[in-house]
Image (cartoon, rainbow over all chains, first blue to last red; front, side, top):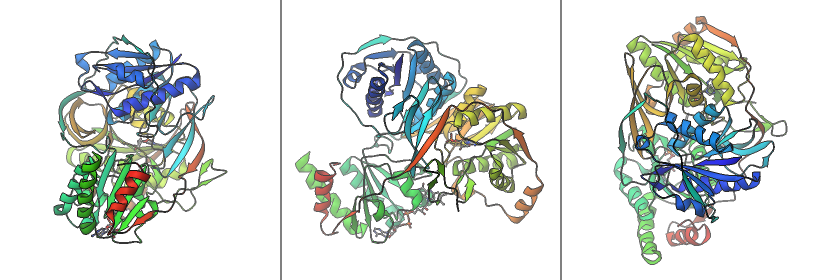
Length: 320
Length: 248
Ligand SMILES: Cc1cc2nc3c(=O)[nH]c(=O)nc-3n(C[C@H](O)[C@H](O)[C@H](O)COP(=O)(O)OP(=O)(O)OC[C@H]3O[C@@H](n4cnc5c(N)ncnc54)[C@H](O)[C@@H]3O)c2cc1C
Ligand SMILES: Nc1ncnc2c1ncn2[C@@H]1O[C@H](COP(=O)(O)O)[C@@H](O)[C@H]1O
């Protein structure tokens, strides 16, 4: 018996989410009175995982896996789960994790819960709390099968240091065939992505036009943040679709979300609810966003944002 | 090309979310149901293949009789026929198993679904369906072209996009980008009239065992009031974010 965690790495390095799922997996294993096993593919050095409780790390090294293929990875996770007699399999909520996690569940004939935000509230029957109705509510779901597959929501659990003297072991799974071929990858390099960002700076229709995004980008760059926007802003073509956040756009679960010139429509708030702290800057004190925010400034973005940038630069200079 | 579009019947995005029966059930009182927004993108793309490439388009949902108006709306938008698998959709895996029978029996070679239902938010049905059937699958699809038996697919990845190629049969889970917002169609009178005549077949469920069960719901906890800072005092905001919220 064991708990199997998949820790995603990119160019050999672990993402923060890999440490988060490992932290979580360790605690689930403690609840079940068993061990955690962490599976990695083409990572250069697994030892950082020991700091988060990974007692055993399975390392798969194979050049054929340089380019992600969901079917192949899902099948590798299945093989690892069988080898380790995993009771629970835990996967992150990055784009790749969201893609292959349900395939793992189908492979293992296991019940699946995605968007999980906390440790199981009970282990028999196995019950987890998950986000539902697009962040407007939660449900408590029992997974009824012997094996359970969980996708942990981003930033829901956080990192928990838990140093163990772990060990790694090479694992050489069989790779299944796939005729789904990746022909190219376009990466917008150098920019912080909404998915990975701790801070997100977002602009709405209140900014009047795409020419005014300079200050949004500057604020984001001072904070090391990703930029985002409301749906009409991307519909109008002011910003790319990939920046659209909300119920029908990207979900945001950053530590800090700064909404500038965004009214706070229910569909927008649904997507940003899981951000820990929300700040709103809006000329209209009646804007619904003030009901959802932790901090707010009633004011004109064109005056407030440049001042904020200037003061933040001073702050960063002192606190860097 | 035989296309199946998987339609999830969901509360409209503006719905107030409430629960009844001691938080065990969603309160559908006064709630408007719609085609899941992501599935609408998929359906719209399917209509393009129908009009430009002569595809036939079937829509399917797993659900009880209350989902039929949503299927009729899809027919009014232009789908040729509809299938309803007559069972309560309580578990995504079970829904995928039901849909796999529909795909096998109908011989569909392109299945278009949405990346997520906005009520359950499983993000699981299409991936599981593909795994059960052994079909290729692409998630978070933002572009799809078909030529003969070959598909070119774009998928959103963290911080960019990936282009893939595949033969049919294929299953994709779509989102905005697959078509643009402005391409979405509102059913017109003629479409609504025609939809009444189009076949809506009810098939019995294969009654798989549920793999998960929702025991209760909870609403988001009420938030404490927003702290307002004067526009002339952005230093105070920085101070609060640094010392109180500890996020910068
Ligand atoms: C099915 C469906 C799905 C949807 N999904 C999403 C979604 O995923 N994400 C999303 O964002 N929306 C979504 N929407 C749209 C949503 O309902 C709102 O229309 C949208 O969020 C409004 O965007 P906004 O706040 O930028 O614009 P507006 O509502 O126009 O608000 C602009 C705000 O800017 C303020 N303002 C004006 N000038 C200034 C200034 N100088 N300084 C500061 N503030 C200023 C105004 O007071 C106002 O509050 C969806 C709608 C539907 C029907
Ligand atoms: N009950 C259902 N009937 C038909 N298709 C469904 C059903 N539930 C989900 N789907 C499809 O699967 C996609 C993802 O849903 P989910 O896995 O519930 O997030 C939806 O966008 C639909 O295309």
